Image (tube, helix red, strand yellow):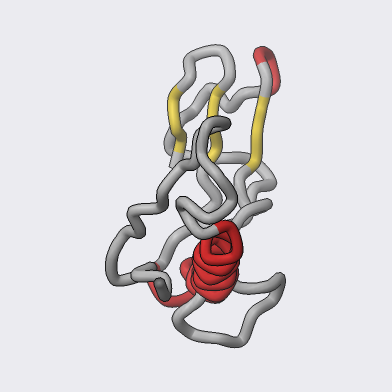
Length: 108
C-alpha cells in the first residue's frame, strides 16, 4: 500500500505477538511505514528548506508574508523593569511587543 498522506490518513495494521510474519505481511508493514515516514519528512521539510510546500519553509516565511513577529523580536521585562507608561516602551524597537511579567499583559 502506498501512503495516503498528506491528502489522507493511513490505516496501518498493528500486528500482535500472536500474528505470524506473513499475516500481516512483514515486509509490507515495513514498506508502508517507510512510505508514511518519507511523506512526513517531505511535508515537514529539512532545516532552511526551499520547498515552498514544506512546513519548515512556511514557518520561516510566516513573519514576512503574514506580518507576524519573528522569533527573537519579543522583548521581555520583569517586575520593576517593566514600563509603567503602557503607551511607550523605552529603548525598544518600533513594533516590538513587550510582555509585562508582573501583570502578564502584552504591551504594544
